[in-house]
Amino acid sequence: MPDAVEFVKLVKKASVEAMEAAKPVNVYFGEVVGTSPLRINVEQKMILGESQIVLTRNVTDFKTAVTVSWNTDDNSATLSGRKEITVHNGLAVSDKVLLIRQQSGQKYFVMDRIG
Image 1 (cartoon, rainbow, N blue to C red):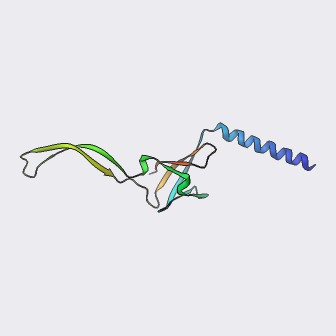
Image 2 (cartoon, one colour; image 1 turned 45 degrees about the horizontal axis):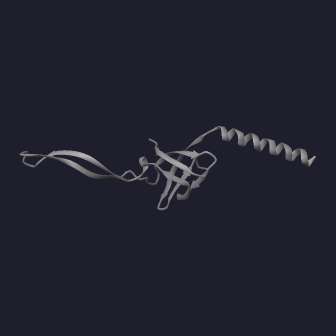
């Protein structure tokens, strides 16, 4: 009889794996619980560390070029030009985030903040 029980367990396991393989990604919600090092609590079930997290530009500080135009203090001239600015968009403790898990992987992509 033990062989039949093991066989049923194997069939169940194969079924679950087949269902998971049919889903290209899984979506999760998380909360940042630490920033140095970065740690995210996923649906109050597990804590992800930096090695498991891939950040998108939506949740990081980054530099970008912008074109600006402004008047001088006495309004006698208009200055314009291309400037580089830093967008401070990094994650902070208690930020709620949307994550996507890589199929059959341990990497989670932090797509954006929620709310």
